[in-house]
Image 1 (cartoon, helix red, strand yellow):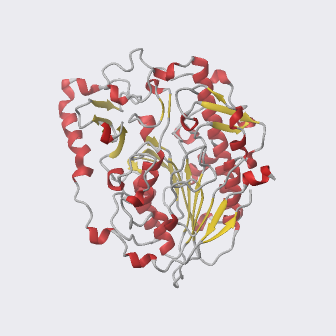
Image 2: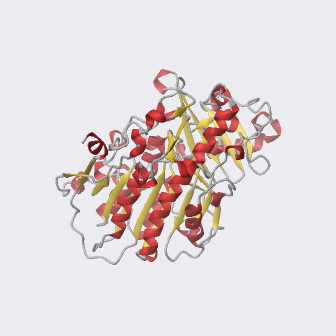
Image 3: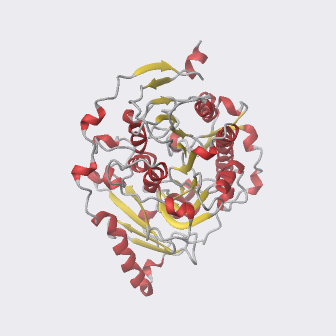
Length: 496
């Protein structure tokens, strides 16, 4: 009975608002991976085993220069789900719910719910701690969903089997820890979530759906079925090859991991990289199950599929690991969009883009009118021609310490050629990297006077979002009466 109780978790159903007669709308399948960087086959990684994400890229468009707005779960997810930058949501850590600061904003999911869509969440869309809060709703947003499902699987029971290289340095949610499980794909949390998502895709309904599926891998601890580890011989993995003095001339604030690589042995680092790849392979297999369901039920012509990682993840670059950095591998994210009738399927896009651009893009693709201005811009035209103009820069920010205790912010702007970073408005240092000649950001050019003109131009560009006039408050929020029609919630139990 204890084992059975372990796998039970709550599902909440909220009856839909009345649906007006309308033309047939496109469905949306929004898939989010946790802590996924761009080490995928469709982004040129020869070691990755990602055949399903690769086939999604062939069916849609992979954005080669897509960036998160904050490399941490809660700020990033609050940002792209509201379409607002982190300084607009004022969410800069993992504890604050965005509605504490912007209570009446209309989220992406809420917009579709108000438009008459069946709107459901499966797994982690808004933030909650992994692995501690798996099976709960964490910082979920009740107004966003008509129905939700919190999967919890075998991986939670196997945490005591982990090999943990950083037990005294971090909590389990940030540990370099792994376990090759003897259990099958379908009993892990992501497998259970995928099974539930397939059931939703198979349902017959008289209105379009907005289904958001949040997978947990490759977030640490890296627990995945053993067969996915077996695809990756350890001798294939090495730490990034970098200059001996990679940190020379770079502001200390740029590095969140000290000493480099936590001071771990080379083999421990290589085992960690291998475990990350195995977790990505497991994630990819579950995404493949969803794509197979779209195939079986002929849903591609009626469904927009969006796949993203919530932020990047460092695997030893600059001696750093995880997120919370402004280096390319932390700020850059995979973003793949497959939309019916787009004119450039299978092509990739080199324009800089941001996660906050997803909200207006999906709304425009579905013909759903925005409830208020957003900070992002629609990418719909790029899906037809990826060479068309778009943004001058993509913006990422990160904190160093708590602002009330002497902490400060780091801001970054990434153009198609350059990355420019400022720490504490430049008082704690600046960085400039030329991605045309230095894609791994090995040499900080900010200390070279001959780049003064480039720095001045990027300094101005970096401040543009913060100097923009805030949206008119009268247009920004929905009237509270718009929420009054929502019926009371009822609760049912989930199946594992």
